[in-house]
Image (cartoon, rainbow, N blue to C red; front, top):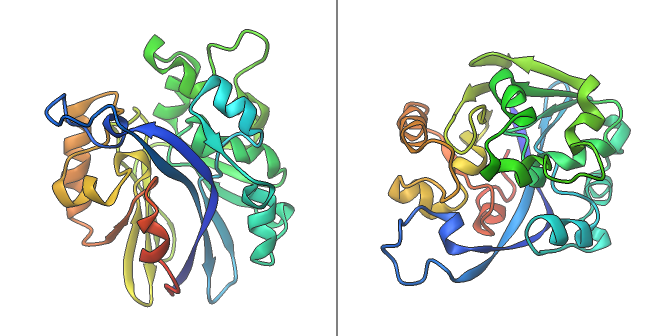
Length: 251
């Protein structure tokens, strides 16, 4: 069995339209809302193995706000601080599973020198040559530096499809938000939980079965939602403050 601990790594300002796909139906799609950046620290209660699911945004909120979305982040919301609150040093993290390689989920790996980083091969291929509309997610558009994920390129281990990663922990492909998005299904004493990346930004995405408003392929997003149904898991949103209450004291 695994224990799940959410790590609060800052707060983005995003439009409601990016959180849930409305196609202009709702009058408030342009409304700006607050959205947390969350990483998930998993601990195996038998072996004490640690696995981090996602690693959060760029450490500098000024940088993040300039090139991406406005972000508020204190020193206490840095990945290193949040790990140490759990009695974990960054060097102790040996395994990271990234739901996808967007800046707000993957940048923190730069702070984890000993980690192997598991990414779907489709995501890796797309990240180096994305559509123009996705340049900023992977920082392909910043001429003064290489894309951030190349800083940990030698740590990346590629996956190709679904895999039983550990006992009680499965990685599944969930394309749609990005071509190589993946989710993590974890068994706990209170049942199964799923971290589905930005396919599910909010609780509303899952309750309505309407994916997030940022997507590469809508049909893939809908197919991934159908796939998730088969796991009968509690789905944890990636950018919703309700997620912290959903996993409070979950073991």
